[in-house]
Length: 245
Ligand SMILES: Cc1ncc(COP(=O)(O)O)c(C=O)c1O
Picture (cartoon, protein in one colour):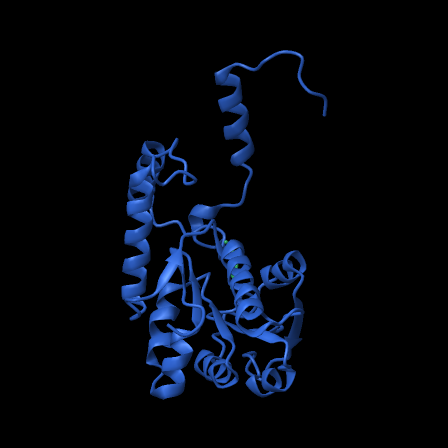
């Protein structure tokens, strides 16, 4: 396609845009799993209005755009409350992929600083989102994919056997993208706590509901340590607490 010699009118641009999106998948019908969560026109109107109001705000300047900082802090704090972990810290990211990148980076940097691990490795079930592979590639971290149990959930025994002295992070999904089942998060977190490494729960697609029911129900000293060393990614934000508090 050649760069156009002449400009295009606003009407023509709008018409072309509307024509193009009219041929996209029908995301209003509720069958575009994980791509669009359409909650109705009334909710969409509120979202559009809020988006337009803050259209020019720049997240790189929280000093100038204090409203963004305030809203981010409030969303993180409310999300932490929902997850029964009110002292958690976090960041809002652009989505699930960036959350996973941040989780792996946090684990890599934490292990480098705290344990002197130069060639970090992460262990994830084979159903973990491809963003873990992207993160491993970008961040120069080795990744080991472990098989599933018969019920398509992570096999924690094989995760245990895959751990080496270079392992910095175990991850589980709640739920996983391929099958929609929730990995045995409490077992994975307890194993991470036992081995003194980090644990990341990828709760990106349905998120908060899975997060509220799985992570806080762990009990006992191991679970308590696991919670302190756990990271969880949810759509609204990302909560993390690397290392003991
Ligand atoms: C389990 C899981 N993790 C991560 C992601 C990546 O999220 P995003 O598409 O927002 O980058 C998805 C996307 O569907 C997902 O289902």
